[in-house]
Image (tube, rainbow, N blue to C red; front, side):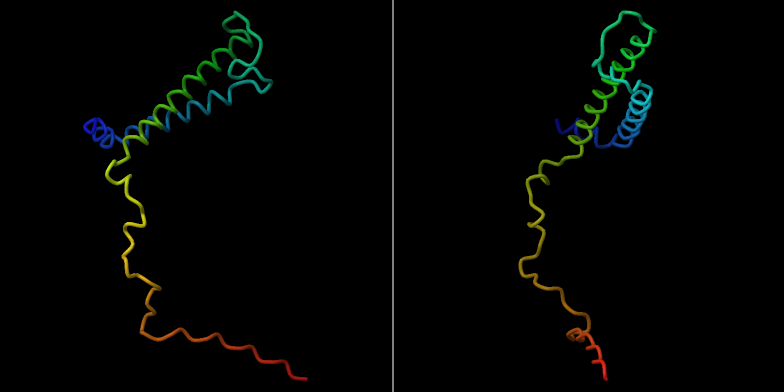
Length: 121
């Protein structure tokens, strides 16, 4: 399993380019659909292939296919980028034990802000 994860980690740029291409294609297919409903199979059914309903059917099927590919690629990329040894540690494990407030440069305390002058009458 680690060999597959390492292989996918090496091919992360290729996976990213494919992911961006699938995302762009899905956006185009979604924008081509009619805005009157019927997207993703919500409308009535018709068996005519290239009628208005037939086009909506094809576009909704293409949307479902691209969405599935998008989801699978997202999961593969997320899985390939994880490191089981690093995932079990906390970010707080990297903080030095004795660290307090950061030191002031020059060893002097910061100057107090000047008080505004009181108005005279």
